[in-house]
Length: 299
Image (tube, rainbow, N blue to C red; front, top):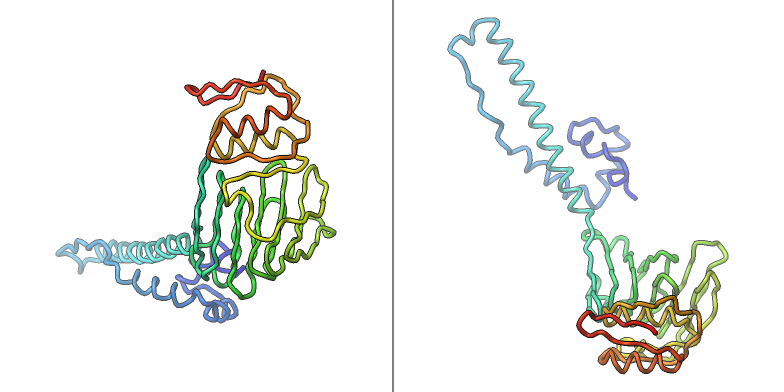
């Protein structure tokens, strides 16, 4: 991270001409310098409030008053310049965020031409400016990525960093399970621990649940959710219910039912009644759907 990003006083000291020669030389070599220089030059054009000159300026006391005003106005000009720079800095280093709601998917094209498809109840964010210098995106939820060729593309989640060594992959970062599936090329996953370091090639993946890492073998093609289907293998009923909530926005009243049983199967995203029948009935769970309140009550 550049010093002007990490040091809150940096831009103010630069505007006031108080940087050390080393700091100034380093700043002038940065890609952001020209933008800040232009902003600073424009801010200097601001006009200060007019001074009400008295006819008796020749008197010593009035001269003193005028000098005080002039110093105040100089401080005002510097403060205004710094304020513009700080505001511009906040904008330049702000983030662009995309979100999806229940049952919603969203297609995104990133500045380098890479494409992301967000699943329901997900969020993706990245730096609004200078992103091509540090191509990191932050993901909460699930997304499918088709990345353009080039170095440095990374996806950050609460589980760790996935770096692109290829082009097509899916990441799911939900509270109860994390998965990375590689569909084309290679990806590198680095978790919080030094030992959590994996290279995944096409047709391979990994999942983390309850702190346990396991390898997976996803089908080559597209993630099932992009075709409107959620597929599970040995997932707890609790996870299945969470996914139904994500896709349909329906609430569940579990009434202390045991949700630790393992489910293997699927449900579609276009019909809630069919989704409930295909997941709850095989698990021996009776339920009632209250369509008016959009609540499923387990019995």
